[in-house]
Image (cartoon, rainbow, N blue to C red):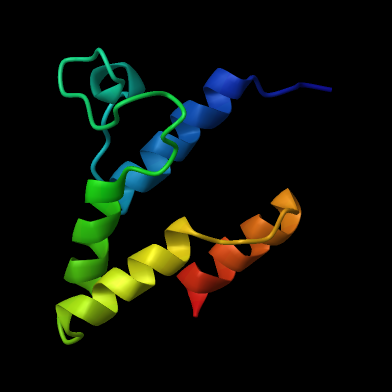
Amino acid sequence: MAFLTEDEIEEYTLQVLDSLDYDYQNGYDIQPDGQHPERKSFSQVILKERLQNAIAKLNPHLPADIQQQGQRQLLNIASPDLINNNEIFHQYHVY
């Protein structure tokens, strides 16, 4: 039985996303001390500027204050349960 390595799965995923016209940035480039840092520390999981830009691009018909409210909701999911947080975050993205 052949097993896939994490590297093989990542490479395949990047190919799929590339075929869907997603842009890719290497994690080393956007890390805090990288060439084009997009976060202040590694504990900052969500790239807020990217999130804000994506919300604006996907919802140009919504007023800016409503877009900001949506961003706040995504950034402040209040459940102490990680699995529940992930489910809520997923629901926000698919509905």
